[in-house]
Image 1: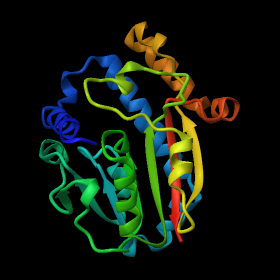
Image 2 (image 1 turned 120 degrees about the vertical axis):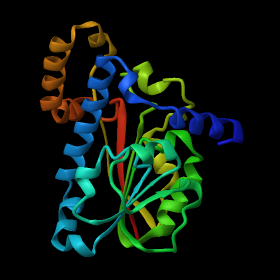
Image 3 (image 1 turned 90 degrees about the horizontal axis):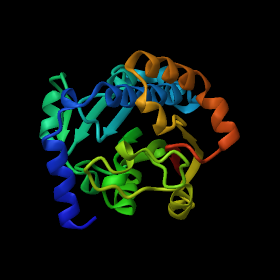
Image 4 (image 1 turned 30 degrees about the vertical axis):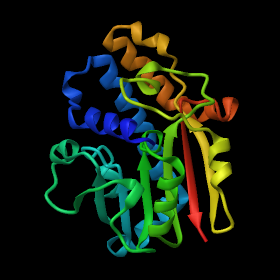
Length: 236
């Protein structure tokens, strides 16, 4: 990502205040976050980490204001974001670091798992992936979640949203796969059409609940056509 784009992204998040957004947008953001929580918490690798949770080191890379704290609070977790504004909104006192994913301030091979959620769209994709791989232990896994360029659900709040996006596809992940960094799991999720935003809040919430319950079934039919991709990669 060039300097101008990087500055635009940082400026956006340094002034970001979710409380000012309309109710429908808050509902859609919550829907995405709940789907991510469900998918990762049910994943076999993530569940296996709980066997030794206090000695398991996790990096939440692009933690924002702590949307996924409940996923990682039982582990030895470092929370990293390049926005001081977001870190200040994250209501924990310890283990927060302000830094850039393209140059992580950690030694090689120290994390058992890395979460990288809605980050890669805004940075140098290959550089960020390389840094995540570098700080993972052998047999460590990274979870990458991105806006899907092959989606049939192109909601402008995720694709544009006044912030630079580099939409990412399954083929992009296939292109960076190597002998020592393999894709273990990849799928898409979130199939709620933007049309439903016109409904009143109570009706939209019911529609969201229906899509939440059936997202996995829809994914099996539409495969890699959801609004978001999740890719889990393992370091060999």
